[in-house]
Each structure stands twice: as C-alpha cells, then as structure tokens.
Amino acid sequence: MAKNINSVSITVLLFVLLVASTEILKTEAQTFCFECGPVPFLGTNADCFNCCKTKYGSPPVISGVVEGSEKHCHCYC
Image (cartoon, rainbow, N blue to C red; front, side):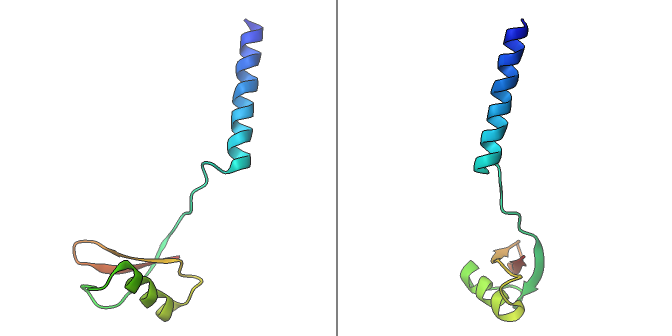
C-alpha cells in the first residue's frame, strides 16, 4: 500500500513539474481598460485595435475588440 501511495505521489509531482516548466496552463490575461471610437463602432476588430493604439498607445493597449449588442470598441491592456 505504501509503495502505491509513493508511486502516485511521485507521478503527481512529476506532472506538476512538467506543467510548471512548460507553462501549459499559462494564459494571457487581458483587462478591459478603455473604450474607443463612436457607438456603434462600425469597423472591424483590426480597426478597433488601430483606434486604441492611436488614442492610448501600445503599450499599454495590447488588443482591441468590437463587442456587445451596441458594438462598442473595447481596448484591452
């Protein structure tokens, strides 16, 4: 029984080390920081990102997305 517990512990430890070293679970967190342009924003996501970069700079802005039923251009930092 003790050998089984040790085997499981070692396996879990190796899995945790693998995940930590390869950053498999790492995600890029983006935070809404600004709005840009008119409402409704009639352009594409690329147009939105250009609006955000022009108005607020890059960095801090890393992306721009047209979202919502009213088509707002949201800038993410």
